[in-house]
Image 1 (spheres, rainbow, N blue to C red):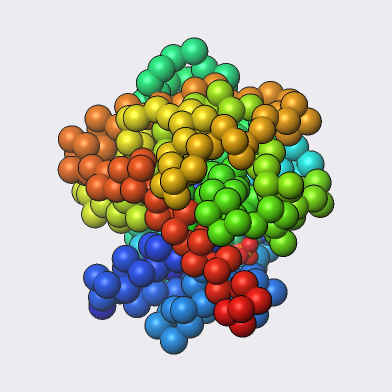
Image 2: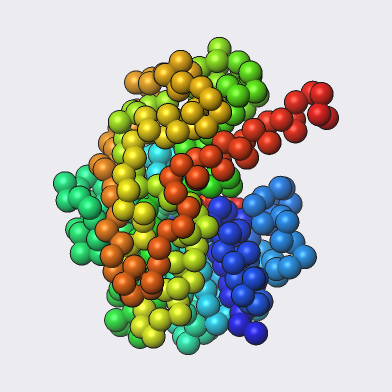
Length: 340
Ligand code: NAP
């Protein structure tokens, strides 16, 4: 039985990946921050199926212990301060986890299990303020926020550790991928939530935004720049790509994305249409929510992954948005006073 260690198993991707590996008969270990395990999280439902190893990516000793306990054949490094927008306020911590955390892991692998295969989560945010569209593995990075800069650093270190020590570290330059498990502070989930509130007739939501006011207030969802365009796919398709990368003979870097560009405006349209409403009656653009420096249009050229990994996305943009809205409706509906 193959053994896999996942950092960030309580996150969106980590939990889907754990399910994917369990289905394939893997013995799955997860590095988890102690405080996160004892509250509901994306991997709670897997509690009896996985081995939980407590630890923090900011502690080298935690990582070494996890490697020694798990004795993994495959390692998936997904742990991250994963919110680009928040990385402005948490820049040092973002570098410590997303940059240094990766190096601590690579060092641990080098000493404890150099034969293990490692997947590292890079990000399309690394392309930042680029004018080259679409982006592939050769496109230069021009990060425009602390999250992206830390990811670019770790990405370079993947190559350096691969070439200097012969470690098997594959890097996935993943474009945006969403799901029912995205936290509410991500804009895509806010839109799904907003559409769900409208469908259920909720004018003032219980959940608050980063400014401490209801996400939906007086029936309106306030967002930043609606012209932002991204290549959005569903997380289930993306975790399959991670696994495929570790099944190849040689480690490499792969861009993973759908190759289809949509704006936030289109995402709003799709979400509200899914429940039979016109988004323009329920969404406003608030200049106070615009980021200081925004990543440009990111559009994946995933032809290398399609050719070498035989990877294709299977869930469309509209299906992804529909699933997210339906999940928010179910969540909100179960909390309505009459359902308690
Ligand atoms: P996510 O849902 O935010 O999950 C992040 C995970 O990292 C959580 O399990 C979190 O644990 C863990 N973590 C954070 N700080 C940690 C620390 N100091 N020690 C140990 N664990 C820590 O992120 P995701 O969407 O699944 O993304 C997975 C990876 O892919 C991340 O590296 C992300 O940056 C990258 N990525 C994501 C996308 C995307 O669109 N989703 C695109 C490109 C790249 P807690 O539960 O304790 O917070």
